[in-house]
Length: 237
Image 1 (cartoon, rainbow, N blue to C red):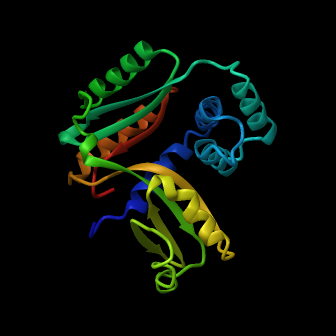
Image 2: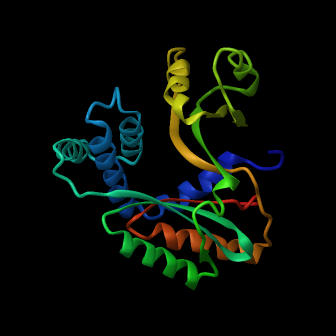
Image 3: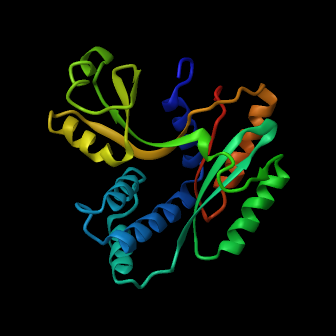
């Protein structure tokens, strides 16, 4: 969408998450465990686990910690975490998607609702804002200019792209993320930061004061142990 950088929005969220590094380890290990339990311990055939391992490596999670989590989960000897997606609103009607992994739904919904109500937001019903977002894969490719990317456009299926200095950020169908990653790596290009995100397709502009309130709400939600990711549809972050 003209005037809006998906990558800038995603990087803003990543920066906020990086400021809470201690919690990030716990959340990544939880995702690794769930991915291994649901899809098996073989990352080559379990794309969700492959993505979780990639995040763990990027966050410098110790290898032995990662291996223990996979082994424990694949033996079914792990907590029974459940995926829940909450939809809601922030200040000035900003739409929110809150992805959670929890072993206690009552605790999680209570905590999410409490943070929302204390920070100018509210919990919505299922489907209330989901139509404002879509799932997509994202991948950053180093040392690839926009002009050079055009040489590959007809050979790989991309939904969108952005250029950032000498890097290109490409957006894909979530199911094709690793296929696209392999395409570029087979051509000896360095890829980074692969992720599946909920990207807003309908945006809202807010003034600086309201933007600060919305960012504070996002940070408070991400501080909750059960919350994995939070997405919002502010256009000017």
